[in-house]
Amino acid sequence: MLKFLKVLLIAVGVVLVVATIALLVWDIIQVNHLATTANAANMAVTSNPRWWIVLAAVGALLGGFGIGFGLGLPKRTFKQRLGDIADQDSAAASA
Image 1: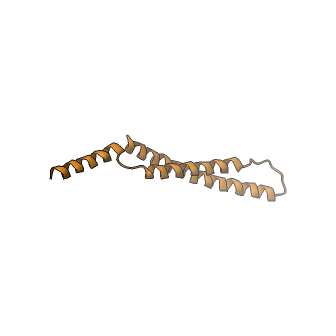
Image 2: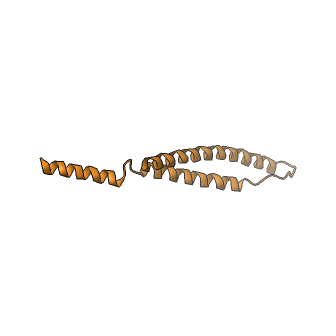
Image 3: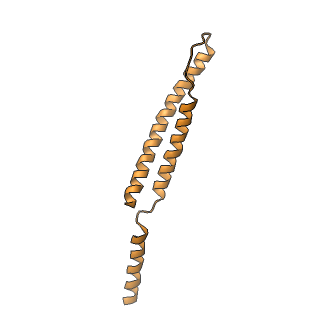
């Protein structure tokens, strides 16, 4: 179960980071369009990309947290490691 959670967190984190990179590229295009419109003589209404940039920052934060947490989880549970220690102690006592 722990290994599944580890792989799931890493996969979700990677997907979030990739989606965030794509969203940031789209945000750059929007900001360039906004700057071009602002510099032009016409006053066309453009959307404000602020919330898309905030969404990209939150996605990067959550993706990085998911990857870091997934990489930080141990491969084996505490009970498995405790069982190995008990096996080593019993082997050492019988020798």
